[in-house]
Image (cartoon, rainbow, N blue to C red; front, top):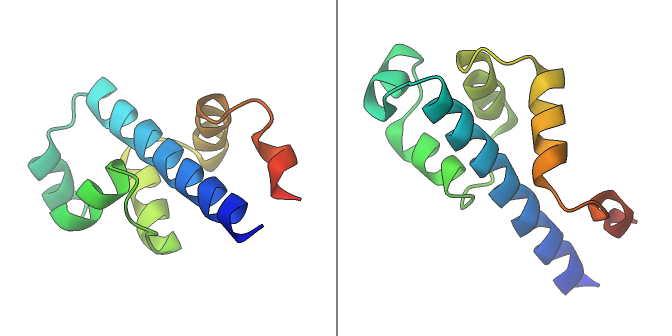
Length: 91
C-alpha cells in the first residue's frame, strides 16, 4: 500500500513538472528570466519541472499564475498528462 502511494505521488509530481515545463516552453518563457520576473527561485522551478520536488502549494500557484494559466486550465492539462485510471488508484 505504501509503495502504491509513493508511486502515485511520484507520478503526480512528474506530471505536474511536465505540464509546467511544456507550458513555459510553449509560451517561450526563458528559464532564468521567467524565474527572475516572477520571483521564483531557479532551484525551485528546476526541481518542480523535473518532478523531484514536493513544492509548496504557494510556489505551485505562483508558477501557474506566472504561466498565465487558470487553475482550471492547469487541472485540465494535468488530467491529460496523468494515466486514464490514475484517480481510481488513489482510493
